[in-house]
Image (cartoon, rainbow, N blue to C red; front, side):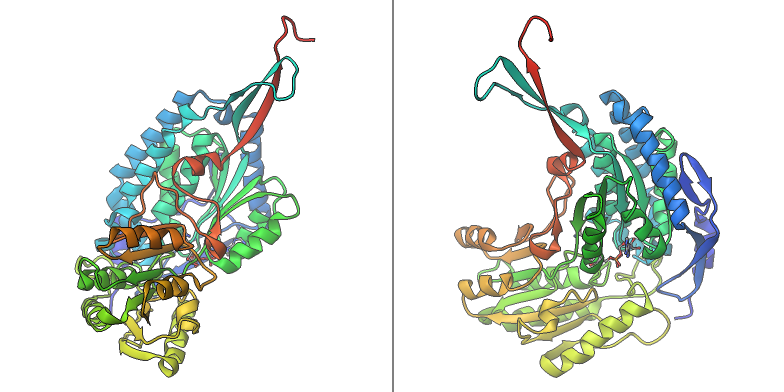
Length: 497
Ligand code: NAD
């Protein structure tokens, strides 16, 4: 492909003012050059925050938490700020979608799909704004005797380090920043080095919405040194991380020194279970394959990359999945007919091609199986059939457009195969039998189970069983995860003694 995104860079403009500390944009000593995954061209530069830059950002957040107005603000102040911000996000949706295309090459055609859209991010801010005036506690009677009441309060947790992956910056930024700010915390955000410009612009807009200085700070740069400096900093109270399992483990280790609170949204190997009585086998196949190809080319935590298909509908499923795979278009993310993104960097491209090459020795290749010729990290949508559920194709999070199809004979076997994984993020069930749908949904060890469809929405808890994570984002439990519960014992006497 001989394509240059330079005209789009000139038209959209990159937010490159620096890192944000205590309301001021600062430059740093070194910079990161962003290489676009579809064109291989240098798109622009952003600062790399050193250990001492990160220290300044955390100290600003600490001071804003210990002494500032935000944690102590009236509910209406926080509610109005978050609502103003949601409106600004919606106003700037086209610009943000364009920036995302310049960052991670997610096509504009996909930027409008609800779960990963700017609109969903705005909804997340409004959803969490709704909890601010409902953050009540309980009033409890004495247990053993005595003349007192116990009152519980939800108080803001403190300084939050929010570390983001590259693949869905609108939603994943919102899922952390919105509940943290709603709860009255202060935040240091670290975007992924592969989706920085989008997040920098979202942070600029947050300041336009009137957030006080120091409440949200942003440090940019890679995992080492920027991320490491943040997760090991003793003044951080909580690390909220979305990303790979390997880095998630590192964050748990790094948090041990000061016993930081940790929430982790990690990877998955989510299964789709397709029964012969599915409402539409072809649609089930195309929906499953869609999560593995369209938009992010399988680089989505909850992509249903493992299809467990009953032998009675196996061939029909494969034919429909292959039809969709053959129709996927890739290339210029600004071309409205382009449906899929490239892999994010050459390292990930090599990793995925390695899985595909090894897979050819152990399973039946149905379609795809190669890098797309030309510039860019594009890989053909690929389907392997007759995969052994213990093989790496069925067990590892490949994070590319690769579907592993495993046959099964009955419901018990399907459940056993589905649960035979170290992950537990999502699952899909396709059947018209209501009793079976409910039975299987309860038996699956996964955070979100969709019956004849799958959706991520701001008010729904989302997260993983097993090694897919710790905690949940979305809904009340996410808001509460940015609070500490305090109990106050109140004597029931005329005067306090
Ligand atoms: P990644 O783990 O490589 O990077 C995530 C973030 O961590 C980046 O900002 C990176 O710079 C930072 N980082 C790297 N090393 C670090 C360190 N030692 N200390 C602190 N920070 C460090 O992940 P990625 O490639 O950006 O994203 C893909 C992964 O994210 C996949 O595994 C995917 O499943 C997962 N993910 C999960 C969810 C979910 O909600 N469960 C959503 C999206 C993505």
